[in-house]
Image (tube, rainbow, N blue to C red; front, side, top):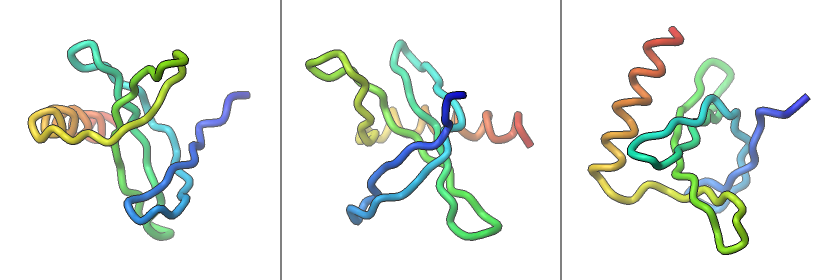
Length: 84
């Protein structure tokens, strides 16, 4: 059985464990949607861009372009509303 957990580094360099929610494609670009527990009652949802590195493996990178970020998070809001 494939795990839906992922280990990432937060903005402070700390390792955190997230839960993979979905992979979406927007304008031929794939994005990973994942959640990280904030506390026992709340999770935060994040997205990272999936790109292929020089060896053909997937890398996750932050979305730096504001327009791209807004487009992705519009889809994330729709995703959240569909699963509630």
